[in-house]
Length: 120
Length: 128
Image (cartoon, rainbow over all chains, first blue to last red):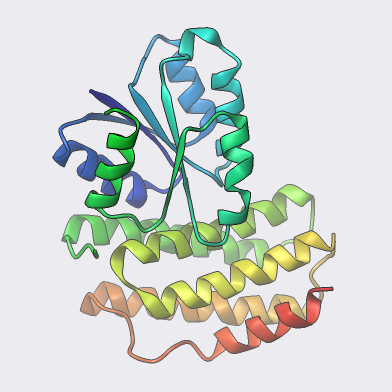
């Protein structure tokens, strides 16, 4: 299984990559939505993308909308990573096409449960 | 769950120091576009979000207070006045003090930042 971590924080990307690796995923990183979208356009097809909300260049919701607008990426599950400050906007991400959301800071158990809910 | 791994902590410190240096430069530049404010907001937002993984409660609270302050400014389409710039400057200085303590001791100071309450007061007053 392949997981794509898209977050502008290197520290957070490193933590998430470790958690995903411990859960048996092969993880790859991008530091914003624009770079994430470029990877998909180059042919990278993760099973799931964990997408931060607030990023430079292209934010999480814009990335989700762009992915959902392209049928070739339909199989990519999208999970938005958010904070307690943004939880009121989760509906916006779900409306845009995200299937799940997780709150930072998250634990391995939380992540496992969320991914399992997506069939991963 | 918190992370005390030295490599992760170093990545957190390096990234946060870099963001706070950018933030302090932003404070001393003439106020420009809404993007400038969005960047300043994001630097604090990223710090607050990352702190949670490491269990740095006090640092998270001051970063969140600064983020909320910038969010209030953004929501009302305002330009930071000298008093607010000074307050945010105090916040950045204190955040860097926290980061220095964490870098040296691996844990944050025991007491919350005294600037946190001032930021929260400003935000409360700024909200409609």
